[in-house]
Figure 1 (tube, rainbow, N blue to C red):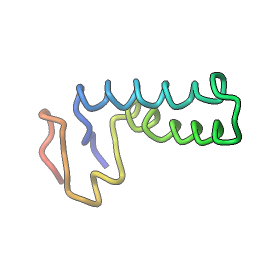
Figure 2: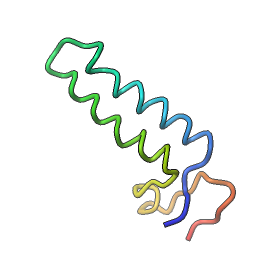
Figure 3: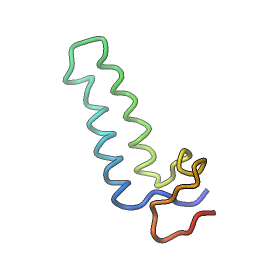
Figure 4: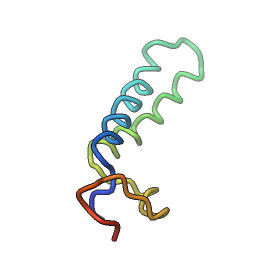
Length: 67
């Protein structure tokens, strides 16, 4: 699977992932652990590949054409 996440999309995913991962440190409710969902956008932003985009045939990376 090639890169299918563009630079701006990657930056947004990384920021959202870091914000979500910081929730357990800032919130004091049982819902704070939902911040662990931030692992997915952070991982896809760092790696540059999104399985969901591949299933949908989407590509925000201007360097590569969809496979």
